[in-house]
Length: 102
Image (cartoon, rainbow, N blue to C red):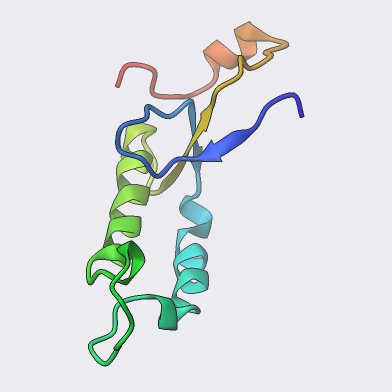
């Protein structure tokens, strides 16, 4: 593998890049909600975990909005790459529309 992009869930890690997922944000949340038994339920007798906390789904939505705001879109998904990324055309990369001043 030349590089591995890790989905970013830690608040302590600065993302290497953010992908605009505005078009897919609702589908993503619907797919997550399909596993309702894993999340908070008043009736649940299971031990509490991070994902079964009452605000966990709102946290996911807020994170998507936050990362989206960093790149000027409705929803974003952040990734972290430890390896150096190979850029074939730095001019194309640096002249594309992105928020590099945040």
